[in-house]
Image (tube, rainbow, N blue to C red; front, side, top):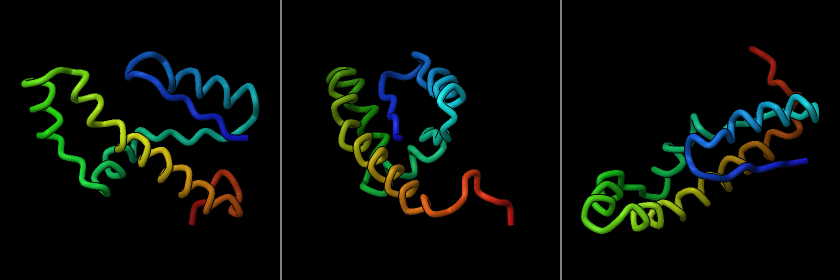
Length: 93
């Protein structure tokens, strides 16, 4: 089972994910720590995003981010699925 919670920042996705994982007995794989690295893999430009927000609109900046968000989710899932044959949680070496 894979559940993906998507939404604006600071609305409680991480809290809900933690509660769901505990209730359902499934692992939780937060994207937060890797998000910016995944964005950079495909050319994210933070300065460009800020410029859009300042000169056009917040919507323009958010729309700029959409393809990077999609890539980050796909990349994160691909990484998790490739490791699916390993025991969870990962054993310390």
